[in-house]
Image (cartoon, rainbow, N blue to C red; front, side, top):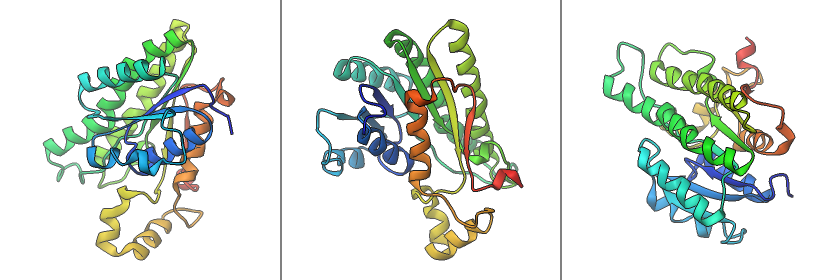
Length: 256
């Protein structure tokens, strides 16, 4: 189990959902991982939740992804503890808002700060460190909503589409500079993580999952393994010729 052995990863939004699943997957395949999240209470439980792994293999950091200095501190901590950075998984994100008329401007700004500005900051500060380390892979978690729009998700659509194009720009920049640093985005459809909790609360868990599954040609929603295996592939040298593109995990939704 050594597809990313010797590599050092930073994962944002790692306290739960896709970020936590990615952390477990990369740890299982030999990486050292810094797990960051703004939820201090939950991130501090990681030593217990990750008890199957050596405590020298991972570290935690309470991190506000919208704060520039917090990014500087996170990168510095990672280099201090593990000497370099090879992998960045920008997984932190929120889903708020409504249609374009109903969305309050403060909500619009908050969604873009968390979903898009954080990715910009992560890329801005990780790229120089990765180029110094000799190679790197940035994996930005977008969404199928960054490709297929919804009438009632204006801010979320905009922020996730921004992640897709930003990833391509970063990839081209790194190639232009001659850096062996790749950047790609991942676009899941509905995945059973805490981000679905508001829908489950509104309709009941079973009906909510069924309602979402009916929108997918494969008639099911995804699970965290579907995404974490894609992240693992992009983090590993198996994808060494892949940059500036995306992996779409949507059960056929975007083919309709």
